[in-house]
Length: 52
Image 1 (cartoon, one colour):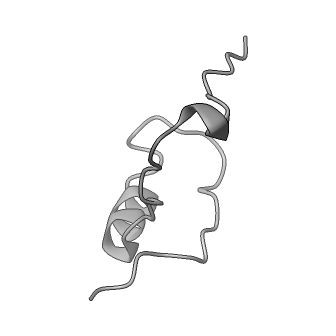
Image 2 (cartoon, rainbow, N blue to C red):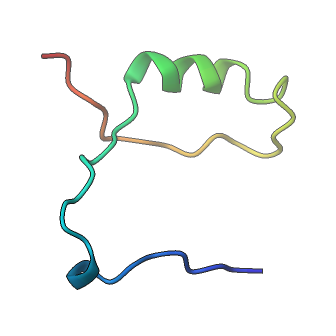
Image 3 (tube, one colour):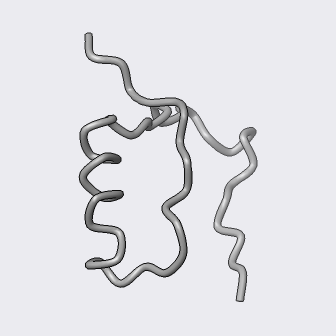
């Protein structure tokens, strides 16, 4: 089942900041991929939050 819970932009007064994954978090999840019960390979992600 797919639920489209998105509102059209004309109904929004403000937008949320774009969320990006931290590299450290990604690496930790990849190391535990099978332990977390996921099958196959972890997806490759190339864009991460930059430390400011």
